[in-house]
Length: 118
Image 1 (tube, rainbow, N blue to C red):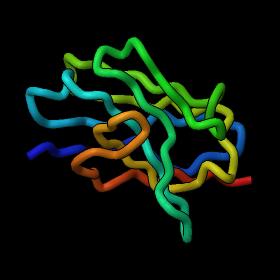
Image 2 (cartoon, rainbow, N blue to C red):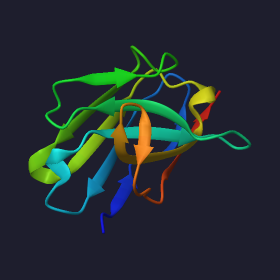
Image 3 (cartoon, helix red, strand yellow):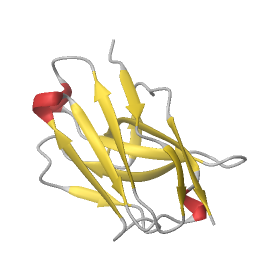
Image 4 (spheres, rainbow, N blue to C red):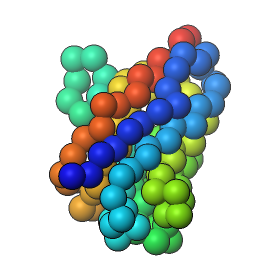
């Protein structure tokens, strides 16, 4: 069973930055594309960003393009989300998972809360 543990969330002012991490268990991490999703209160969980197994390809939701950067370190079984120029509308619980395209596959972690104050 794959376990995903997200961390790095917190409270930040608008315009600030945060770096999220997602540590994955399992020897096959480097075989999978990974992604980040988020869920704001009262809203459905939505796709944020994805990265190919090699890290050579990335894809972003329009709402975060140019502000967020997804990356991975397969030696550490970890995927990252660097979030810059944060806006109050980025406030949500952020989750990582395996992806197929922009769709979630398999397990969710517990998520990490990001709160952006205006």
